[in-house]
Image (cartoon, rainbow, N blue to C red; front, top):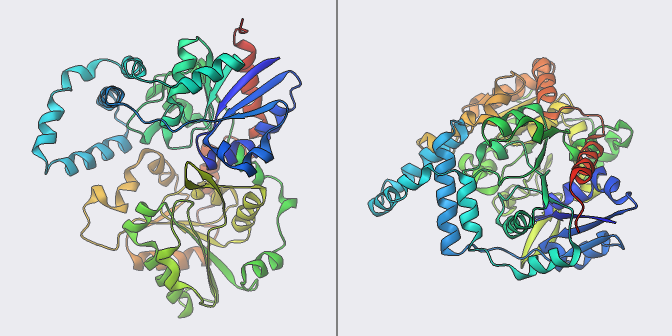
Length: 465
């Protein structure tokens, strides 16, 4: 019996992994024991759903860095950002520098670490690990003796730090599988060293090598496992049923507004954008009857949108379930949530958002995408504006395909929405390119590929004594 240890620090990550075919394939291996480390052990429904004889769930405590580890992490960040030219990181650094400019004491303190930042991040991670004390994680490693540790975020979430430290000290092989499309270019800290990375697409593989310092043979491409739900068209809900379920009219076209997490949404005041789109629809500015569905981001809050309630042809939804994690609600998805999103993508006529992942998902279904790159406050500086997203590495790559459009004012947004409704095929070639470059394959088998890559890593790992 071999043992695989997996970290699941958050509800959304747990949903993507445990409800994909990745987990089904792993569970089907007769000689494999899976130990899941997650704070979701505190949720009885989660444990009841996923625990079994060969799937053991253990606690993953919240990790709070000590002063020594925090200093080492800062030095690792300084070392990493000094040598990277990723545009996202440079924009974030410029914004941070602008925010600090009003505090001369912080600027002077920053000078004290400049000479130390030339040591590599891996060195500072090891220094930080000297300050990590987690007896519970150590006891779990002693009890189960894992052959492979699979991390969802490569240490970018602090929950995983004690686990990865213990794996390194015990010379246990590690793999990272849960990275999102922006994780390699947006974070101010690099991934912790791992033996293998499994990424979505070839662009991410290139970023892992050029920015994160991984060798080509360490990085594998599998596609996007939670997009496997989009492959089987027979699972789509009929249009009439889907629209009636939402309280909408199936004979009218549908604009879906997908919001961002709350601080990004506040920059362009998404509730104001929604109201403007709705008023334009009511006035007939889109050339015929149009309805609006607002799909709230998992980290956006319903409160700012309450004033928009009870309007015909306007629905606001946050179609997710919640688990309790360390005293707070953590968003998660069950199978019905994934299928509802697939139905939304399938039946919508156009998507409006602020550069979120749903751009890629809409392109899978060949739906026009309009991004709002403007703010409620027209005088907001670029570094603190929604406009800055157009310079982010992963987003600029999407824009450059010509598969999505960008509105810089509200009037331009209204005009682009009308154009897209009247000419839905206009950007089709660009949308095809977005899917090809970002999804690798949309064949319903990405989860299986990911699982087999994990099993391959397990085969290569030396058996534990």
